[in-house]
Length: 481
Image (cartoon, rainbow, N blue to C red; front, side):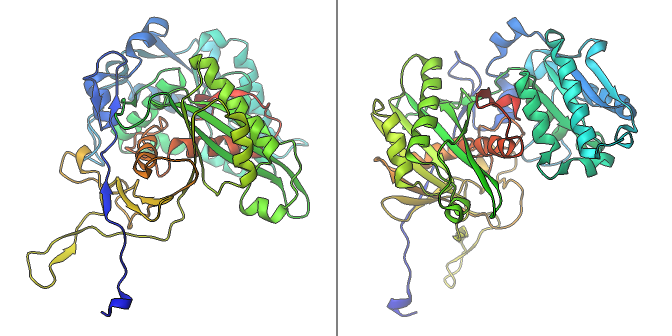
């Protein structure tokens, strides 16, 4: 190969797998593996939680025909199960009470609402989606009148009703979450697959963690890091635009504030005031004006200050698209008292791929492709303001057999990190993104493809887009899980 055709990239860096903590007091209660950490140490809030919620009371809503199945699903969570899938990652499930130090029980009889099996046939002048929306609204309104009797509501939406789940301007899941948020009722949606899923340990892990969090518990947090500056906070931004190319409505935005340990997951729902002037650009890269960005960041900062009494010393703002100059200006207007601010674009659309090479034991060729992808945490610098980060990859440190690639399919695509404003090492920015991929409490996975600053704010943005009358208020994330 001629010298002109050779391409060189920067040397890579391997970031450590972020450590999780399972106790506010015991510095030894840590692990890189979320499920193994729960088994060995219990949840982060095991002591405080059981003082106020010794029993997690589950109410239910669903068709009459699924009554027994819903009960059997709850019973499944109370007993141990050995893993039948992902055995290199999933530990044995010990049972809900042993795992979380709190008993899982059925709420009083009056909190269990049974819909008629022919609910959607009773349409009269309404469409099936309208009937389902009305039923959901009436059920949660009724439950709101006896809120002191339960902690979480399990809602069964059967597969045979799937034709009513979506319609123009309607999404059953998002509408359910929005109604629940109005009443501060956390909900857990299940479908028929939950009853038929053959890997009992996996479904027990996923559903148990979700119910514990929705009842107000915290399973784990990020362990203190020597590289992350003290008093750092994170904000994730996501936008949704209503209307179509002929008639564009409003841009909505949501942000949430995370403490440096991943706690404090609260949302700010915000409706932009300034009109959209460039429709094409807004659809390609939704953005806020300077005034609107100042407003949403000010509200997020006030939320952090209410919870922590002080302002963060350093604030990192994530979004999936480029920051417009007016967005940076508006944010800086609101953040005049914060000493360090980072504006980081986190994109999953990188065209880069990487293959991990190992010694072939031969002179020619001297290397060969490994059976597993590049290690999770691999970072490659592209410039002084951008880097590639493999948040997905081989996580050998959590495996019982030496290697573990979550999902086990395809060559992982790295995240492209671009700093639009700020200073400091990109290794720190990458390490924070990597850590925040482990803070999704809505599943049993080691990591998410994106940091929770992005994935959580996107979840609320989708809800706002489908339910535009959701009040622009502050919500704990557990209401939208």
